[in-house]
Image (cartoon, rainbow, N blue to C red):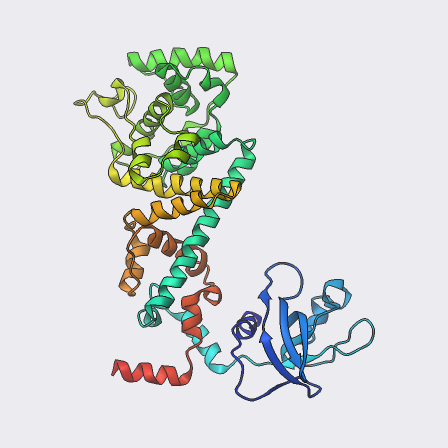
Length: 434
């Protein structure tokens, strides 16, 4: 219930009658303040007039005034200077440390807000708010989608910066690990990140002009050269890896992390590792080249990798040789790499360097790519929310994961529009359906 009270205060869903404190002072809320999700008062920087006198400061909200003591605010210095206490039920008086009484406003959550929120939580629609979303103005949907796209970029940038911190603040290594993770295309994402972190870049860099040695380190560190296999190429790589392992004191990862179930052969870890080995050998993709690529065509050209001769006729070690196939990334895979690796890296680096042009280029890449096609996007399309490009699809993925799955409708613009429906609005909606 306290969440709903926060919602009512934040959006100023107040009764039509005049607001007054419990001691009779007229209350005018000029600005409810900024919702504080960390420790301390619930809203900071609020502006409130009490009998015509303007106060600026913090506001605390509770279901009952007595919760003030239950939460130990009476002994916390952070609450000594609040300008107003708001509660659905004022069951006792509060005082500042100097003995002066703290102003209190009794504010109830309107019944229609409670009912709409309960209805939203009961709904088994996908998405739950679809009955309202389809009727929202286009500009409102567009504004919320734009905010979600930025939020998605910010989240990706935080993940990349956290990864960079764990990789000795090395941007090139961060790019390699991020790229490798996304070469797992979801199913093997964690395994590929674990593998990439096990690649000693200083060691493999000394053999960068030898594709065979690069493959030996890459496949060896993946734990894919541990078995007995009657295959000449495998045995040569295994022998080379044993030498390099001793030379650089290498430790391979557990090969059981790799998943093959329901994967098409083109997506087997062996093929993806072979593609990454070639990409590394040809030095196609590094941070400098990425930063200098100004168009989508230039970016995709950097990712046009292929495989060595052995992998043109094999999908795993020792398997039956097939007709030679040039195993390149498909257009769809290329676009996913741009969406999940290139654009977020540009945005993160742009934020780090305070270079807005890089952030703008990241946005542009998403806007130039087709929207992803998955169950999330299809559900929102059925609800009447258009998805024209990858920026839109990433926004909807962000909406689904950070709001819908968490049932955090109170922070969502679509949820806000659903919950704020008044009885008059509902009656008009019913008439429209008739």
